[in-house]
Structure formats: structure tokens, C-alpha cells
Amino acid sequence: MRKVQQRLMGLAAAALASLLPLSAHALSTWTAGSCTTNCSETGDAAPNVSYSAYSASINTSGGAYSSTNGFAQSTLAYYSGSGFGVVAPSGDSQSPNHSLDNYGYQDLILLKFDAAVNLTQVKLGWWQYDSDITVLAYTGLTSGVNVGNTITGKTAATLKSANGWSLVNSYADVGKAANTTVNLNTNVSSSWWIITAYNSQLGGAPTGADGSTSGLTRGTGTSYTGYDFVKLFSVSGNKSGGGGGTGGNVPEPASLALASVALLGLVGLRRRKQSQR
Image (tube, rainbow, N blue to C red; front, side, top):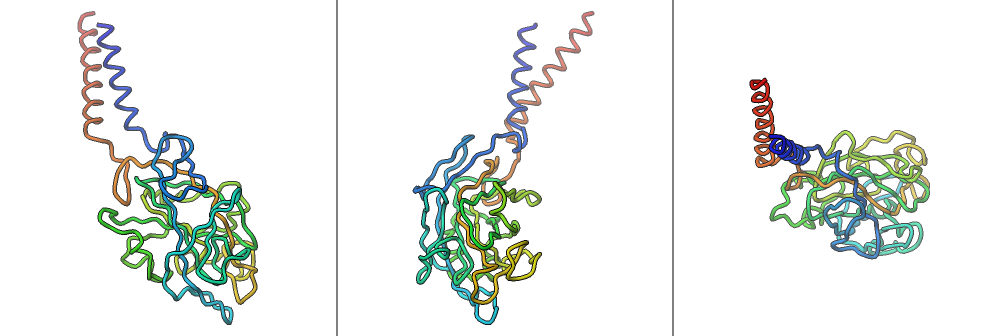
């Protein structure tokens, strides 16, 4: 009788463990490196990721801050110890413009995981002048979709319109923290993520004076002050339990059934022992 009870308890524990929420799993970290395709992570087992870059020229004349041109494939550059920057098509290879920035070009880095991931942290390896970023997640269905087509030719103003991209949030002064928590309130899981230098057209109202380097701000004119120049060192998060673009944490029917059977068996044994007293 004791062996049967122990076996049922073991089955119940195993089944219930499979139903634990995402937060119970260890955090994984994907660190920028010379690898850009099918790159593995450190920490708990989780999907691999591929990186790519896109840029769109912006208008900075007369204090304007608008990205009116379409995004096109750009060059992702790795800087040892600092992380990924972006070198746009022309006049963008010098410092600080070879970073992920919004001066002259609005740069973005696409992270394409091979399964849904819930990102929770972003870490910069380098920044200059200001370090505000915007994070987006693809919340549409990914099956049969070419992710490049959801970005190429789109402007900052139209990227989210019927393309499946949704704003997670914009974050101020990211370079001043060792790790910045992201996606806290939205808690989105997705296979595709965008990290870009801050752009108010994508979402996130400024919280400081434009041209300043404190708070969520926009650059103005031709001075570097207030523009964001960052290099992406790493992202951290958890593997989602579901599939598709939005992921999910729905327990599998088999796990639910196993847990139910095991728990019912324990209840039955307890009642039988009580009736024999």
C-alpha cells in the first residue's frame, strides 16, 4: 500500500511541476557575439536566436524628429565587449553613428527566436550621449510569414499598422543600469522582437525636455545631444510554453489528465485507509 501511495505522489508531483508558471523556470541570457545566426544562450535550455539589422533615414533639419523613409536591410556590426551596433548605408560608420542609434538613421535590431520567448531584461554594453530604447514584439501569427516583409519598406509611423508589430514599451536612460527590466506589465511572449533607439513615432511619450540626456527624450537639430547611441550587449528571458507569435502558457491536456488521475488516486487511498480504521 505504501509503495502505491508513494508512486501516486511521485506522479502527481511530476505532473504538477509541468504546470508551473513561466516564472518558475530559470532565466536564459542571449549575449551578442560574432554569431548572428542560430546563436545559443547561456543558462536554462531555451531557443536559439538570429540577429539582423534595418535602418531608415530620418529628418533632423530644423529640429525635426521624424522617420519618414522606409526601413531597409542594414549591416549588423559586432564590437567585442560592447555588443551589436548598426552601420547604415552611408556616412554612418564612424563613432558614435556605428551604434544602434537614431541620428541620421533610425536603426533597429531584429531578434528572431526559433520559439516563443518572454523577454524580461535588456543590457547595453556601450552608450553615448543618451540611451533611450523602444522595444516591440510581433504578436501576429508567424506561420508562413516572412519577417523581413513586415519591416522592409515600412516607416516608423507605419511599422505597427496591420503588420503584427506591437509596442512593448519605451525605456529611458537604459545605459545607466546594469540590466533594464522590460515587458514587466505587458508580459508578452513572441518569437520575433525589435530593439531600436527610442522613436516617439513607435510609442512612448517623452518624459524630459527634448535634446536633454535625462528621461525619455528626443534629439533635436544636428547636435548629438539628446540622440540615443547604444550597443546591444544581451537580452534575457524565459522560453514560453506555447507556440505561435504570441506564445502562451496553457497546460497540455495530457499533463492535466495525469495530475488529475494521480490526485484522485491519493484521495481514494486516503479514504480507504480511514474506512479500515
